[in-house]
Length: 231
Image (cartoon, rainbow, N blue to C red; front, top):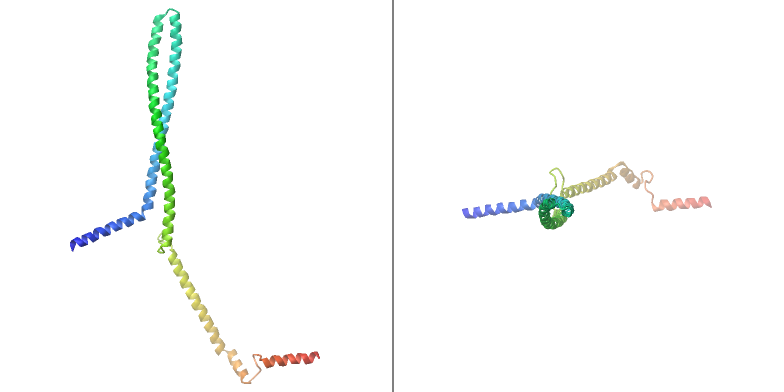
């Protein structure tokens, strides 16, 4: 018995957890998308930094190549002038600059590979984020339609009324209007049957006093009288 109760309790907790997760699914999705968007922004900043560093390395490489070319011209002139000592000094500087140039070229190659990888990553992440946003809008619309179809629509806020409540109010209003109309008609009929006009009609039908309602004989007599006057 205890095991059954424990199993029932665990099942109830699991069901309640699933129901809570279903109800909060859109809220969870919104937060997850905010986290994903923040991650994409960080990746884009990293990409921008890598591109800036690559451009800086390119400018450094251009400066190094210019210095190498300038020193080569000057070293050649020193050799032509018989100043091998100066040419050697220039050659040493050129060798160091060429080492810096080779290092910069290697760094630019690595940067180019990293930039290409980051661009693919950011492009893919943005595409997935766009697809998620589209899916979120569809899911939100579907959830609203599902709530509408199931009939037991819950108000978004505690003080808001639901559609079934509005329908019930309309039914009660129509029922009261029908009851009021029936009561008015009954009252009119009651007044017609027991009021002064009804009494006067009754006396008229018994020959006491002039008729209140015209009969066919009265109409024919009136028409004949008009014919006699015209002739």
